[in-house]
Image 1 (tube, rainbow, N blue to C red):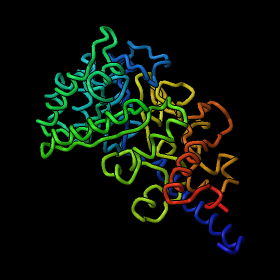
Image 2: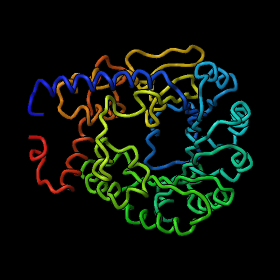
Image 3: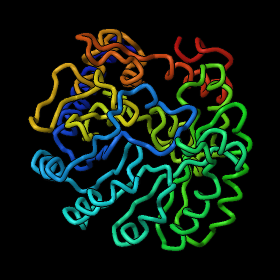
Amino acid sequence: MSNIEEEKRYKESQIENLKKDYEKSKNNIKDIGLVLTYDCNFGCSYCFESNVNKDENTLMTEEMIDRIEDVFPNIESILLYGGEPLLEKNMEIIKYIVKKYPNKKYRIITNGYNIDKYIDILKKIRIEWIQITLDGDRKTHDSFRYLKDSKTGTFSKLISNIDLAIENEIPIKIRMNITNNNYQECLELRDRLKNRYQNKGKLIFELQPIFQLDDKSKNFLEPILYSVKEHSDNTINNSGISFQKSIMNGQPIELKFNNCSAETSARLADSKGDIYSCLVSVGNKNARIGTYYPEFKYFENSLINRNISTIESCKVCRFALLCGGGCGNSNKNMDSNNYRGECGSFMRKFDQYIKALGYDILEEVIL
């Protein structure tokens, strides 16, 4: 706007409206993630839970499930997560969950190894999708994702279990964790899987660089994975930064008061009685947002109170309403009294997009 004061008033009014929606969303919990255990039968080389104190013998109890129902009475959908949720020892607690919530919609993030053992349960419930990870063809995948005890590769067993799920009309999401070395192999594997399962059931894909990659690698991979060409074949694009969809399909830019649902309505209850709001943060005690068992409480200085009005640097940043403050979990400072903005990811992607639109330098856009 040419009038600075008018622009300031407009910005303040938009922030006020967004804040109201933000507060409403925080109190409207419709989905719950259940971290049944931190135990896992895989020994993945890049596991982001590898340094978490898992206490592997801890398993969610029926009493905990009953408590979750008391704390979150309006649940419409359930995510089963871990560790590995479909371990054989989890069978009885999963049966209890399904009996208590027979008509809810389910999503499951699993390594996929025991789907065959759970198939009788899975084909009787409403499944939105089951996420299974394949990180390339057999040799590459098996070098990343193998059984913890025997170091045995898992690719062949996973393909067999994907076949089984598709035969039973269970939607599958194929997750691929991308590096500079496996991205081409993963893109080719995706094409082969689409051809293999066409017209036999719903199959979707989620491709993303692994969390541990440096910015140089992400700058190389992200334009490939998040391009217009790949948009319909990569669900991660649906949660991209706010102006990404505008560039791709011309929709108005969506303003952001916070970064993602981890700062509003996302809830994950674990087997230790703690509540988290981010998949990547589970098991990190500093990232807890509260507890549900035996006592229910929220912590004041937690991720669900982080937004552009509580981050000092965001209050004066011209990109705050596009960025939403960036990823709060990446700061690893949820036990601090001060929230920090995470600017790196936004600015990296912003630079990628403006160059894709034909600008040479960032200043051409912001000046």
